[in-house]
Image (tube, rainbow, N blue to C red):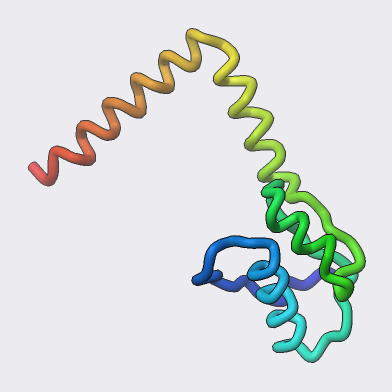
Length: 101
């Protein structure tokens, strides 16, 4: 069985030590000595925090986030697609800033 024990908003800068403290707080809130795994994005700071936390046995990169990075890289490498995405973003920004009609 898999469980999500918590999500926490980090008010401080996302330093390795602050993130490690947040991880440990979630574990403390659940009165856990250790957790089998933590799922993270690919950010070097959260990966490092999970790796130095001796209460986390494994760190797993989120498949969805990794897939999104791959797709974004592939799309931006094709200039026609990149140009079209820029145009769509520009049009979207224009209408978002124009206010209600």
